[in-house]
Length: 175
Image 1: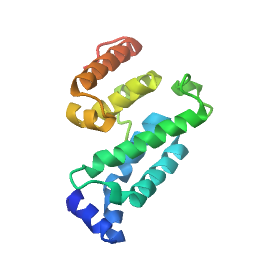
Image 2: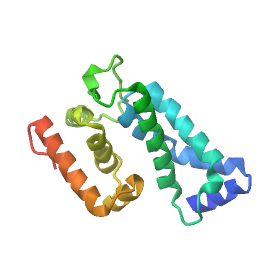
Image 3: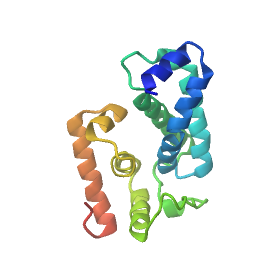
């Protein structure tokens, strides 16, 4: 069932319709939060918080708004609020965290992908976020532009710059 229909049903009070939306997007929101926060428990908590906020505020979603992008904006705002609270914006290195994250085998299918994920985690948060959206989650430039609320040209520039920084970390070409 398409999102707009599910949202319409949720607005009418059908909890089961919201459960369908959660089932559809929970994994994607969790993965996004995990890459931003680099902490499995925080990612789980913020995934739940994202859906709770979405449920509470579903009536603010305009008819023409895309639920998926609206949900990702909620997750993004929650993640960055969490980062500010943890005061780790200056030190987001994967190896410097007290807890090491064990990423599911589903995410890491081969050594090259693992090396790429580690390198992405060494990037600053803006570069990591935009590459996660583009190269891990597979969003188009237009979709990323909507999620981040930036122009299409700025999206392209930031992706290019992030890939250039990633290339420096990897020490090899990155396509």
